[in-house]
Image (cartoon, rainbow, N blue to C red; front, top):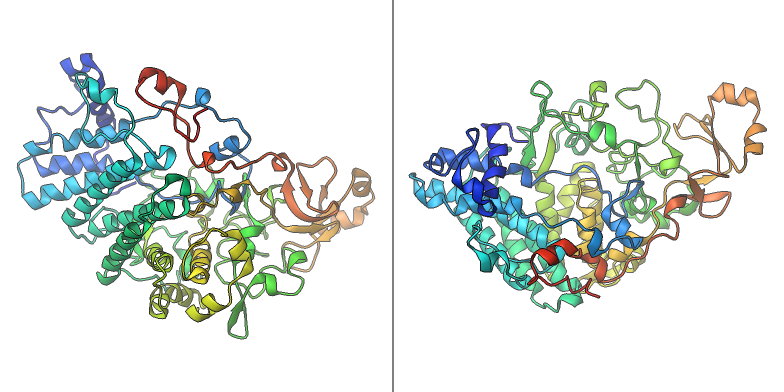
Length: 596
């Protein structure tokens, strides 16, 4: 969603151009409404226009479904896979259109008449998009064919080639990113891609690949360190540029962290390396307002418990609080990291389109997401939100730097102060001490991430906690679990709030809002006077869509998810090739993790 100088007509044209390598009739005539090779790619303005149409290949996220951060009711591929429903026969054919669109430009850029540095900027931008698109393919299939140009119908050998090994493809991706960061120019716009944005994408991909090679023994690749060092170098360049800083100013009564996700204008926010610019007047909207809050998802207890507790100026684990396991909705928010209330709906929260405090849907888990929730009522309808969305923010760069250093076993207290403690300063959390991390390892983190291999295991655990908290709901968690080799966590049935039969206050006013009962007979026995006085919502456990972990008490779980999921390692980290693709190109081989 780029605001500046986007030529809307181009989007449809790119798709047509991308098909030119596979359609003889198209090669013979050009649609009157499309751009043509003869009339295009003549100057840098053409390159700018073309690359504008590629911006949609890298987009923001505002939910962590699917992952252990969420209870989610909709069908998604990983859940289908863990139910044993995925096989080559029911997979869609793989799509190369977006990569072909990039290659189409790169194959024709030599005819452009313009300043070399400016031309190379757009070549670098296109190669950055190709790197991202290709790495998405690697994440799905591992080995894929590498195409450095758009194919023509005469390219029989290339059209019917087999997969190239992951090593070749990833080295080609890294070469694309090296060219991008070395040739893209600097710029001040926060809606346009410039050098620092490319550095951040380079760091993202290098961090992912470094972890895949470190935590996925099935790949038999032992060179993770070189990728982690790319992360450190790329992040250092961004940090040393002096162009970015964490946003610490309130927006009216809204705290700085929360304001990042409900602002209508991020153009002057120095934390934004790049953001998506939405605009009510121009009809550019998204769906965060209607789709997140209690619609078909809830935040998980597992995520809730990772937020630290603050007492007497020090932090401790939630699990160290007496009675933590049976704390009710109104109690779990006490003395917690402030980011929890700015992510989870806390008691007393009033949604923009309401006048009374919200009551969470217990059928969804009971922990609604408020991060990204707009602050005006007109945005709480389907696809009508127009808050700006962060795409890459400086906080992520700090976290990537800290994680790479910890994985390398080279994290120092100075590094912690430059990264994690800056994030904590923003929300008023006590500073972290590296010595505490290394000497007082959290057994919960150690159990969750049991495969960590670093001389600084305690630091890896705590950086992962900080990443999970800071970037919650921004679409990173699923990829993180996969790259860390922790797919088994996806098979755990996510849990919500702790409930017991009886009356329950969720708004924090000391008055009951719900009556939790075991049977319909129990519901019928509730005095009508109580129902009227408190406007009670009655939840009958018998025959409901959720159950509690210990019968008449415990954590909310969706009944449809219990006993349904199994994660097969390493098979389920990958996607099978569609049978149709194997038939179309007999030189392809089935993904070895799915081969019968």
